[in-house]
Amino acid sequence: PDHVFNSNENKMSWQAYVDDQLIGTTHVNKACIIGLNGGIWAQSAGFAITPEECMAIATQANGLPGSVLGEHATPVVLCGAKYMVLRADDNVFYIRQGADGACIAKTNQCVLLGMYGDGMQPGDCNVTVEKLADYLKDNGY
Image (cartoon, rainbow, N blue to C red; front, side, top):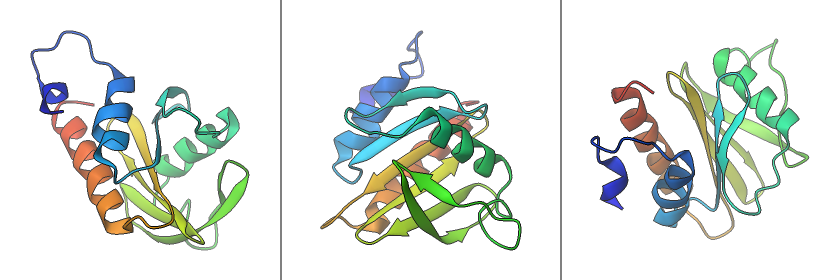
């Protein structure tokens, strides 16, 4: 899948990032890319996140870490389920509910959300999402 990182590519496919660089690694089972304004740029097949949830995630990503931790924190809700925030810094936060969880990383222009489920390693999911976030930041996104 290294071809997606070809900087000579004229047109960027956000869906290819979701499909190849997140889902394709097998370390992420659901994913989406959300603009900092809350719009959905791409999402994995069958991921039932709502536009309202995407808007809330974008708002939280723009206000890290206080938006998800501390007295002014708002709940993190994905697909109708409320998640507990494990930790957060200025650019990334980690959430969990039972066997499911996610790494949510902010870049200059968007938010990457990668989820893991039962039998998957949270650390592998986190590394996968953060590596793509770093790549996008390095390339102006």
